[in-house]
Image 1: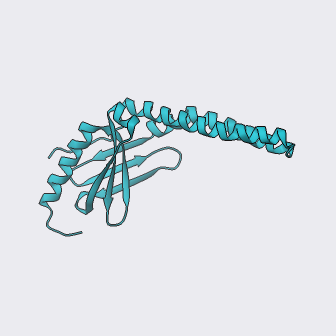
Image 2 (image 1 turned 120 degrees about the horizontal axis):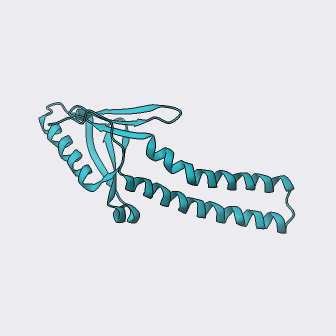
Image 3 (image 1 turned 90 degrees about the horizontal axis):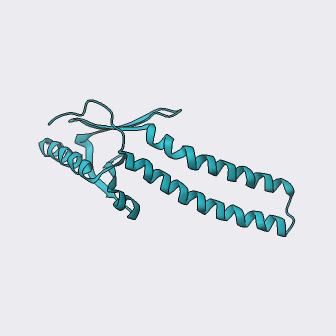
Length: 159
């Protein structure tokens, strides 16, 4: 079994997915804030509430542009013969490590947008917790899955 010695990032299609989801979130949030602003003007709510709504709108627009970039460029993963690592390196750095011997099962998630882009999201579950492997191509997920299950066949201990 060959190791992946370096950290890897999701394919470029994942960035496109992040932008699509972020845009849909922006539309949903802007529609709610628009209704609140209309109600505020119609019923003469306190004027300072309008400024709070404007701040939320500005935040959501900034988040729509910069959130996907942060999610894409600062999340890495690595799968070796012994463990799975997911590394988040933006502002607060965190690393989730799971020993392959402790893995109980894998969950693959796809929605219509991920299916159209050919991506898949995988959760690695153990008895104690769950880590989320970033969006990968379906072929890469299947390769990682076979590597993990080959390693699990060699393990004699029960979790």
